[in-house]
Image: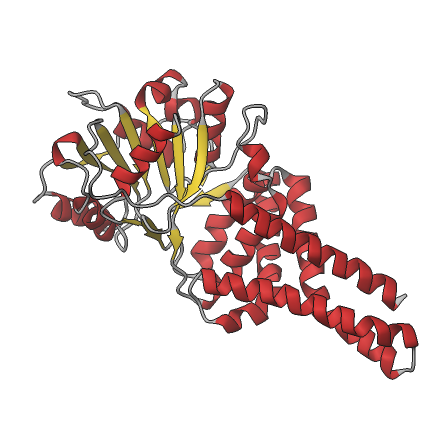
Length: 385
């Protein structure tokens, strides 16, 4: 019995590691633009929706002021979405010295609109004198490197894309961030087929809403954020809208171009992930199986070698034979998470705690399922619907 269980465990580890490596190889990183390249000429309207972002907004604006993109070819519009803190004041103080930067107040939230969707739509439609060729939606917790806009636009044009999304370098500060977020991204790589999602035949897609560069003509043609006004997970909803209309979209890595710290404590991380998790993983049933499977497989890395060692101590020869295989497989599983810790630039010993990370993630998944069954979501002091 011990040998059968160990062989199944080893096969699962091999499949997951192969899957993670294959998915990572598909995830192309967008590189900064060569300084000798011709300067871009397309007009870009950058839109930063912001609600209660007093800790982040100044860093976001500072990054956008340092862009190498020609100043006459891009403007930045920060849309304050009825913040309850000092976001608007901080944004105006940071933006006012810079030409092309403005802060606008979002009108009252209409019925059946989600706040971020409304702020993005306001930013994309209000008082546009010189129509842009591209719209760039950037979250307020993103810090841009100087080459961001130039590199993103060049890549989008080279790939003939209508929507380009970049995954930022994630900054992880607290121990809960360092435990949960790497495990969550591993779950995505295990359970999503990025190669299939990129095909025109696949109706689904994968994007990171922290950075979306969209062709303006395509955005308005598909209805923009107005078409997904009630979507809690608005980035996926907008990307699906593009894809349903035959538009080309793609997600790339952007670790050298932008960084972000999405959450600063357990509470905000739990609420933020819970509102998106079910949608991201593809529905309630799929989320349930992923959460359950992740916890079982994670703790198996500890439990199976212990069970084999116990069987071997009782004199079971098959258990003794299985022990070496179990230790090798569990070592490979821990090694995969050591590699994840290195990727996220956190102490390697967090790789030893990955079973705890998946367990905390499963608790968030349960909360997300509960919220979806109730159809009641909370974010930034608002409750939807």
